[in-house]
Length: 599
Image (cartoon, rainbow, N blue to C red; front, side, top):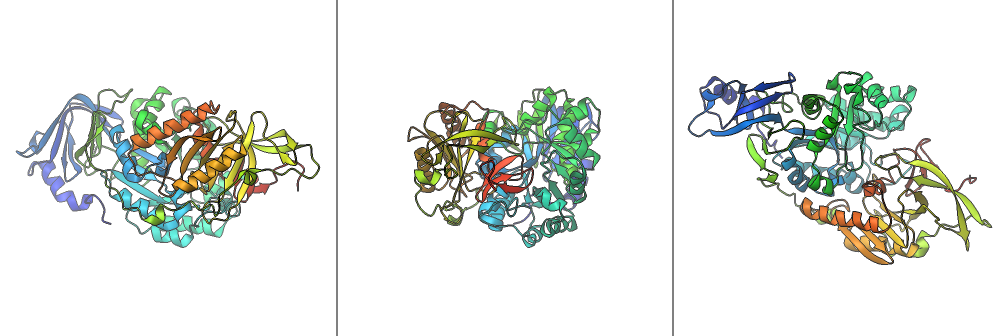
């Protein structure tokens, strides 16, 4: 698949001719206040001329670039800013395919995305990554793909549908849309010199591309320095100002995220707004955004507005979502600013603080206006192999979710996953739980969690306990989105409901289902890899909102609790998680028994 836009070198003769006035531009935008993120200035009265999808002239007067066929847009004194860039994200988290994700975010001013499809890699392997990559290149905006690095995310602690190898990484580095290596989540492997992890990073660096980071430990001592030495160029796992400072001091870019459930910008941006550190090494991103957030709240425009509300200068915040991102990925001469030769990605907005997205232009053509998309986002022809991925092996019953107590015990001290609102990390808690007829019972704020194997049809179920959701009554919620192994996570207070929910997802081919009093009260169908729908974002968002409402009807009061649910199997973020192999102590990176006192 060819590159979607001619290169600067290919178009340079025409760009020069337009800038010199010998040829007419395709488009001129005038009567604007140009936000120049290169110089951190606002330039009143400047104008821009576009040819062949790139900026040809950026200056005080583009009259000499206008011909009989030139489209002229009157900016009406509004600000012209670069198209927004999301530096780290997972399209699958929106429950949408790349085409539908693009259609959802283009009206919000996002014109460049740097995506890590490691969710589908865990389900479909390299073939799935290629499908995401190919659909990404079909879009009218820039979607660059990072080759997933860790499938499984933690070898020995989980089993995935497919494994990504160093050879896969080396192969993908030759694909046209691959921009680098996805987040290196196996930070213990890097620190301990794991040959495969280092080989993947080496293949990426030898290709001249960027290694994405993911250091989810609070330890900033020797292990952190060892991880930095491995070559990770950025990190989005910081949750405090000290995390951001530590990363930029090591030459990493600090990526500060505001997703549907991750609120890590406010706690870190003080490194710039109060400590006065150089903002060039700070980047804004979303990481994970659900369809409902995209439809109702926005995308990168939401993140920039939030950064401004946290005290960041508006132009600096825009730099963190444009030029800083482009520079980080070696694309400063390609995008991220309004300057000659760059892709003509730009936004007209009447206010730099509230940032209404009024007119979006990508590659020199209008792609959205007044909140409505004006272009098509082509779909990939997803094969049947991508739509039949939920294999339980057999129908499950309530006994599959029974937790047997140690012989003769009347009560147990159980290790319990503690959910933390609006954050990815969990807490490793312990609770005294009662035993009835040899089975451990959930009690009070503690409910059951199960990880159901769904890739190979083994029928395997790993049981445990979780607290923090607030569920009451007889209920269950099951999801085939279970970062990163993407087996099936089932959380509930009633084992019959848990079995019904699990079986329902096998029946529909994947998604999320909520059951209350043994009846289904919400369903989000995700037929592609059990992760995504190819329906429009508004339809998926409506189903997702009904699912969130159903969770609330079951007693849950957490903000966007589904994101916490879907991450309960993410065995690379502390402190306690669950996998198909058992309960995982992520601080020690090892399996741990469910009950205290067990070997």
